[in-house]
Length: 185
Image: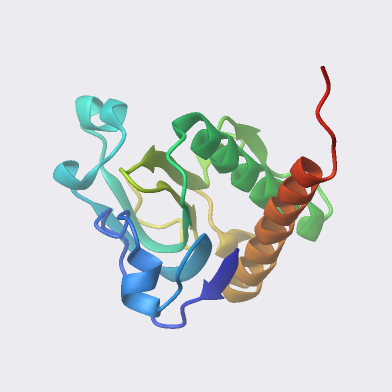
C-alpha cells in the first residue's frame, strides 16, 4: 500500500471521493492513502452520507487535515472496518502525543468532551472502496462546536505522516496475518 502527503493545499468538496483519484491526480496507482491540508466545504449533492443529506447538515471547516484512502475491493463492511481502524489510529495518536486521554472515539467520530474533531465516511464504487477522514486543524467558524489540531499544538504535516505510516503498517500486518495461517477442517 502506498502513501503520500500532498504539499499543496486543497479544499475537500466531496468530489475527491472518486475511484482512482490518487492515481489520476498524483500518479499513485493501487491501494493508497493520501493526506493533505485545506478547507472543507461539501455541498449536499456531493455528500455520501444519506443521514447528513436528510438532516440538512452543513459540512464546513476553514482548515482540516484530510485523508483519502482507496482499496481495490468493493466490500462496504470491510471499508467501514478500515474507517474505524483509521479513526482508532488517529484517536490513539492524539492521546499519545498529548500524554492524556483528551479524545474519545464514538464510531468513526472523534470528540473532546462535546467538541467534534472529525468527519468521516466510507463508501464503495464499482471497482474500489473509499474512505474520507477529515480532522479539524482550525476550530473557528465551524457549524458545530469543534476542536482542531491547533488547539493541541500538533503539526498537521508531521501528524499526517505518522497516521499514514501507522495505517499502512496495520494493513501490512493484516495481510501478513491472513497469509501465515493454515486452513482448518
